Length: 270
Picture 1 (cartoon, rainbow, N blue to C red):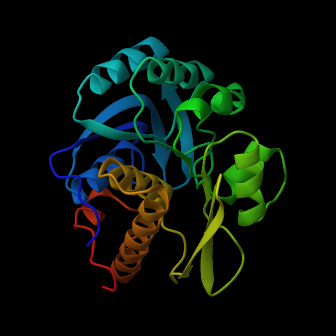
Picture 2 (spheres, rainbow, N blue to C red):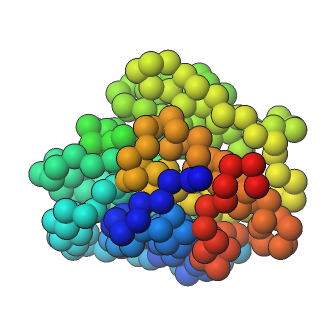
């Protein structure tokens, strides 16, 4: 059975998406699905529609830092993840707080832009990610466009990007292959100090579903918070998300709204 954190607290450092199709709302729903109590530190509000992001309103970095420190003062908080961080000041404030706290599993989903268009992290923030968050990160989870941007390239494949980002200093990197043009299967690649591991699953037909990156990183954080080793956490979270995408497609959903992720994680093989 998939891991459940059972009376543990998980924290998301993320933005509010006005469509509720990503960000804080999806993260908290995933935490609940894995049996955890969620906490949220809000970084920004994205005025978003199905056409894209119309505006991003960041919160003061000092407020984000104070709220994160308060959440992490709770000893039952076993893991955390970050999503949209919006500005360099927030990136550095989060890193400073984490540096003053006991280490916890930390999954960084580098939300650089919305799938429908619109920047969600300023350029200086992109440049600051590794320096400020790298030392405290358990896993970085970019998709292919995010990995390319972090590497300063126009296009990448999952394996070479995962290995290159790991070589640059990220302790572990999971590059998600959903944006690949390959048909038939999606391959995610995990790079760690032990080498690389591949996770291949059939591509779910029916087009893109928004919010998948948020859901996957939140599910990995939940599994890490329950004590699973990294590779097991990545595999179980990926299997769960794949089942969730099959349900979303069957229901005709184009986004992982909170209502779409409240079911408990399925047993393997379901």
